[in-house]
Length: 186
Image (cartoon, rainbow, N blue to C red; front, side, top):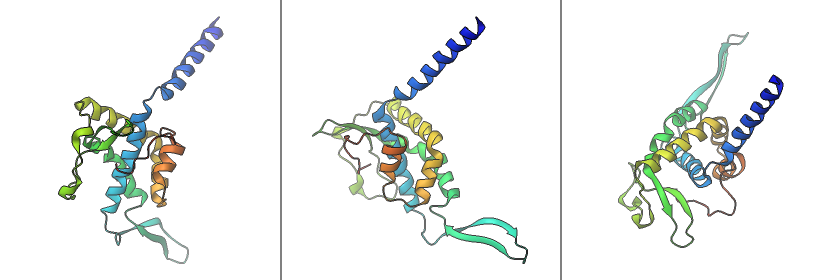
């Protein structure tokens, strides 16, 4: 009898766990994935490309030398980890946006960057400002994705891949669908 109860409990829990991933709002999580990469790429672009960091073991070799190498700081694991810690704080700069032509709904950045010009202001008429709960939902989705995909994000951005959005958001996380409208304007 106890084994039957245990088996039923495991079955119910496994069903609940597997269905929780499929119940996630694909638009929200796809937008969060793209927003994460957009924010990280912008932060990386703001770092001086000449800045380097020493990586290696810092242990002495038998001949008395130290084996280390210099890598660009912008795409180093240390810098990317620091950026990931605060990337979700910028999700309040995003709001739901409905494309007037396709009626495709996604989250887009509406706030200009601090170093941007006045030309960075988007047309606000297609944004839906639903109050703080919309940005809180995006921030929660962002935090969830960063927790789940941290190693993949660091690996892809560290290699300076060209199609990071496609690789991470379409292939690895599987939140974005191929037939959805690409979002180059995040």
